[in-house]
Amino acid sequence: MFDELPRDEALEIVDRAIAELLAAAGVTEPPVDAIRLAQGHLGMVICLDRQQPQRGRAQRAGGKPHIFLRPEPTEERHQWTVAHEIGEHLKSDLLGRLGVPPEATHPWAGESLANLFAHRLLVPTTWLANAARACGFDLIQLKRGFRTASHEVIAWRLLDLPEPCAITIIDNDRITRRRSNAWRLGRQLLPAERDCQQRVRLTGAAETVRRDGWTVQGWPIHQATWQREILRSVRDEE
Image (tube, rainbow, N blue to C red; front, side):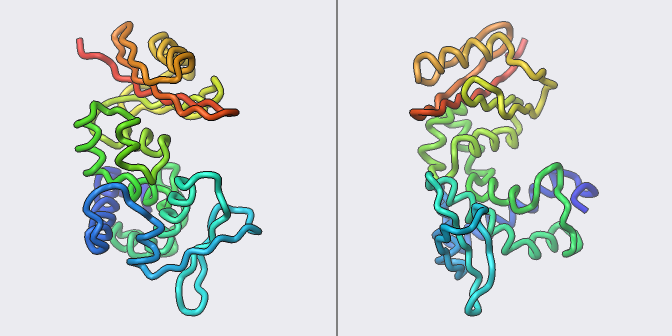
């Protein structure tokens, strides 16, 4: 199963499959339009279904694969749902590349293969690595390029780059997701992180705080009734 594969090797295989898919579709730079990819290159039919409870579902109809979408408030949610269903559509090929039996269903590293595929399709690793380093890992600038992906998806993908960092998602002043690719973190924000988050919340603008051996970048994703701040924290070199 997935757990028997070295993580880096498995991710490289998934990234290679995505690169081949994008090259075959003539997509050479971000953003990746998963809806156009599904319809124009894979011959899938996209339909809105206001009655279904889940975000999306796929089935064959009239000899063609269909993706039925529940109407969502943002285009990014539709893009992610279609990217996920493309992953499900290509699952047997991906499993073959990974050397995993087709009947395998359990998640790898806590994440389904289709979820993993969707994140990496909307934000391909090679493009992200180059763009992130060029802009100093500025989430707002990255969103302008990878505009079909949500801020959260882009931020979470930064953890897949070699550069050590921690990403924290804060919704209405409550931590909802927090993970590091390098250090063990506590459940509570570090003083530098709390300082940065409060500044971002107050000003509604991107902020950078350097304190106690940490550099923290923060960005506001604010709406009328809901406020999100995203933090990227890096331990300074001594």
